Amino acid sequence: MASEYDLTPGISWPTILYRCKWREHNSEAPGIIEHLYQIRARYTQNIASEVARSAKSSYGLFESPFDLLETDHAGLKKLRAFIEEALQLAVSHVNGAQVPPERIQPIIVDSWFHITNDGGYHDAHFHAHCSWCGIYYLQAGDSTAVPDQGAGNGVNRFYSPLTFAGAFSDYGNHYLSSNRIDIVPEDGVLILFPAYLLHSALPYRGRKDRIVISFNSQSVLRESDGVA
Image (cartoon, rainbow, N blue to C red):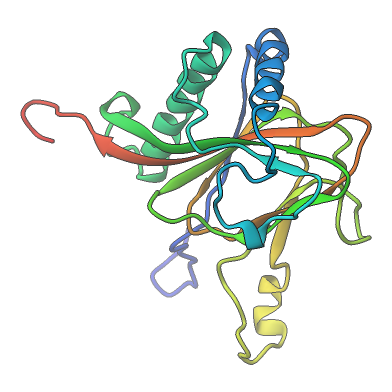
């Protein structure tokens, strides 16, 4: 039994990412994909959102306007409901379950999609004016990791929020030397991550397009017993 004189660890300010899979992906994805290609056909420019063009490749990447989930499309409405439920669970959990998930009201403030191929990419960035962000992998295509050989094909790379920034480095902080993780897209998988986390989409090439839906969200508490 540990005593007050024993060295005991305490973890502060962890960075948590959440992952879950949509049960209805196989039945709904074909219709959503067809709808997204119809949207893309309306635009001549590759960055239809007009947002942060300098961070995105000028080839091989289409980015929609930022209102995708404000839609009457049946499949996207179901996907939005799944995303909102996942956000409720994640926000409740990350705050120590101080309030039940049903009291949390997610607000999706931006939502858009990427269709990527032929080496398209999105440079490292983070998201403002929101607390939680998400990536839903609608079609992973030929995305793959390349263990111990550098960049994978079409992976999302997340960077540590801790940096050495010129600080001293030795074995004492060796555990910080792994400063990034790569997530390989998988059909039907949703990744939720805090908005402050720097991330990128590495170049992708494949027989099928890589298609993802992304969003930014805020969360408020619904009133309960007169307390907001």
